[in-house]
Image 1 (tube, chains in turn red, brown):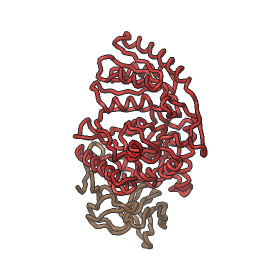
Image 2 (cartoon, chains in turn yellow, brown):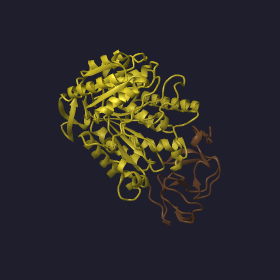
Image 3 (tube, chains in turn purple, brown):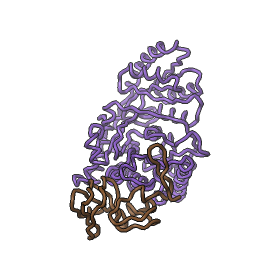
Length: 409
Length: 109
């Protein structure tokens, strides 16, 4: 651990990673178990007991991997699995992975436990047991170099690329300099930025992989008929995908790009990583990310402790597992939605703040939230979660030069 | 960030990069407001909302539009100096944008 810089208290996990929260997840494995799982969470009435799940009955390698990554996330202290009984999800494998990570885990199968009421009653008791066991975890000092931070923009407008996004870029530069791991996305929202991103890659081969990932996104979205561009983006003054992209791109700051990671993969070390969220192979299962929370879940599955969410039009979402910090780009939106926003970056447009100053405010907020302060969305009870079908191939060695270097050494 | 443009009226506009041929509205402007663009005083022929773009110079159909010093698409119609630049006269060189209800707007692809 870095001995200089800010330090806060983390939850030490068996694999050596440290968490800033100690959530107990109640995970349903098919929509048919969703209601029972939700009732268990509602009855517990504890912000640390959180609902996650997967709706589909057909098995999917990506979804199984995402659930394993989430269930063993450093912010998670234990898991209650709620299965209907006949769905395709391999509940035994998930439970075994969680148990192997040293976390308390229990599984309830509704068809065996006596139906809705009996499973809810058993589930509430189980969640409380898991919560008590999770509370025994050791607290240890944690530094910025232990943090994984992701960034996303949602509800972008013409101000996003001038205020909130470059301010997050300043914060990312400071975090990377302090030895943290930072993740930005998504390739479909970086169309038009591929050449400049490639020039920042730490190897030429990684640069080629980044350009290929954006070309894949162009092909994928063109096949579907829509770019990652919502009507509200145009209302706010953005006209084209590449205009939105260039504004979004500034969230990445100026650090070298150390790798291209897939959802659920863990970054091999400190530095800045681009997440490729567009599926591989033929277009199937629909849009790469049907809404912002799908991308947030993917960054959390890759280890993010905190998400920096920039918004111009005004998103209000949070997330299960990891706190979401809202950075508002537009001063008019901030005036309307101040209760949902953590940072008022629109002051840059009013001459009341600088990008460097707001970048520093965001860094201070990351440290405060990592130290236990609730972000606005967290305090308001936002715990959105969405996971759908996708298909990925494994990343090649060119995507992770640092990991390749280490494994060759 | 570029320096704000001088103006008369409430509106304000920002040049993000010296190479850009559009300015970004940083404070709502009313029709008839006067904007000083590179020393030329121009009256706005329509109101411009925060976050929207106006032409820094006359733009011709097919011309690349530059913001942050980088291309954000090509003009699909001519625009006079200080005219609103948006989906009615600018389209992507990559992928179409879509409106509410799923209608596809033009792209130069």
